[in-house]
Image (cartoon, rainbow, N blue to C red; front, side, top):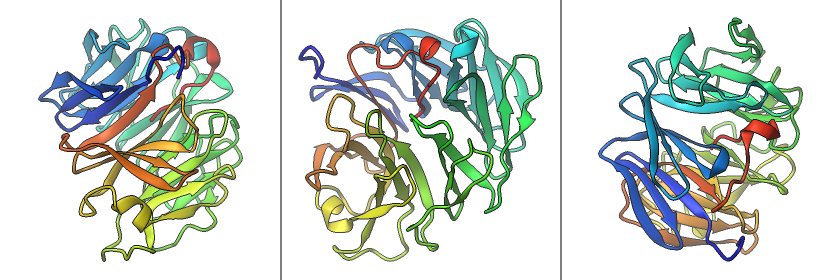
Amino acid sequence: MTGGIAPILWIGTRDGLLRWQAGALTPVVSDVAVTAIARLAGGRVAAGLAGGQLLVVDRDGHEVRRTSLGVAARATSLAVLAGQGERWLVGTDRGDLCESRDGGATFEPVWSAAAPLHVAAVPGRPRSALLLAEGTGGWLASEPDHEPQPWIDADHGAIVAALPHPLDAHVWLARSATQLLRSNDGARRFRPVAGWPETLRPRLLHFTELPRCDAYAIAHPRPQPPDPPDPSPLWRSVDGAQSFQPVATRLIDHARNPVGELTAVASWLERDQRTILLGTDRGELLTWDGEAGRTLLLADSLPPIDHLLAAGPAPILDPSSSGIFLLP
């Protein structure tokens, strides 16, 4: 821990935003679903709300402001482009690209796609963001007031989601409706990942923080309940997402309600980078220790969890200077 202060966990649920620190759970906003969550400079956090608003809170959980996106849609993702000051880009479930040039105070739609849109900053290119329309295509946005340019050449089915390796700008991990994919040329072309079963549908992707940068993938559950030695929905890669190995069901399900599904994942900052957090649609919050091979239940009886984001008590990553912005 830094300075003896426990790190902070932000929990986005179908009933609102929660803040967890040292076992204390504090509601930040209630009665509205959180549709996206992202880290900002200065320890702040942004959360997309079901009503088409973007909520910004400080690291103590106090609301800084609530801004309309200017469209009747929900935020799916947020990127702050480091090379352009306070230029924020938000993708929505309706396919809108909403832009703010005043630090998130106001937004306006500037571009649209034909499917839900996800935005990710590009490591090493502080003026650029990848725009991914689910199952439709990918574009690169580099300059304000310029149309995004086609970018992804999808050879293995339409890509649904993608995220960059935190350290290697050439490596991206992606998923289609049926495949887990990897790119080593900056998200231009993707190929299937070794060791991922063809019958397993990927659901969530995640890279841990520096310095380890392990990759995790969560799959949709199989039609039949697994036996204890069978693979669980949680898979891990320790070779830069080149190959994945499953975590046994017995190591995960003993600590949770096995009827539920894993629906969220995050790195637990300021701890061993093999420790991650998992959330379920049954409102369970768990830690998975990849080194010791054990799972612990931190909390249950929460609303269904859709998003997790861990952050320290001080700023972890400042997108105004780093050139890298990590999305959950």
